[in-house]
Length: 359
Image (cartoon, rainbow, N blue to C red):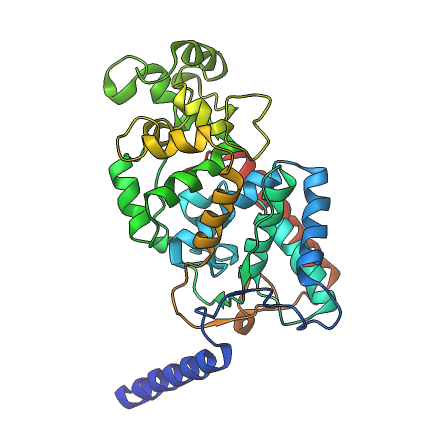
């Protein structure tokens, strides 16, 4: 019995090594224009941009959703599309990711590129390219992205350890430093909050009982706090509405530096957003961005740097972004195909109703 178990274990180990050698590593040599010439005359990045533009035309809130998806993917085990994998204990099931949206957009992009260039474009690269296009379509600069990633083979909820909205500046700096990102990178990436919304439950304490004082957060503009209390009633009411992260209503859906101007005016929504405008380690960076004209370029550079996070683990080019190739079961009937579409719809409905638990 012992010998048989040992043999089985050795067999599984050998299979794993074979799969690893066939799949390659997630740690690839990234480069701008990696897919040029790899799909005949098809322009992969143009295909991605076309699908994203169509999706945002129907639902502009896809832009902040994709920004958040890339951050939640890259900040865990590197940019390996592990957040896309379905499973009972996959990253999708971790509390910070329950409100992540945009999976259907990635599926649509993947279907479009597979139709002209099967087995070549990774889901990890699709997330990065789609996010860049979403930023550009929302008024930000169109920065050049590096591609050439492989898709990860592992996705575990237990790996998810994202900075919460109430994190201190010191702890946030430390969390970003662990990923090789500096203080400027952190402040710029938080600028992703220039678009998008937050549920009241994520900042309600700032309106009613900040740090158990029984009073509002003194760093919040009192007029803003008063206005927000009408949108966000006392937590006992169980009403969890949403508010814009950029309180300039004319700019709340535009990628620009308005967010920084708002937090300098003590009109930040999330605690970490407000604190970076006050902390000595970050306030000068915030002031420079708010008063400068180069936010789009600098934000693009920070997103490119975020996109370089990799872990060196084995990877592959997935056929479906929701499953690794070795475990993939193709829909064999119309019923199974309909089940897959229903899963996408459930993902979207769930994400819209659950408060964000990470940046």
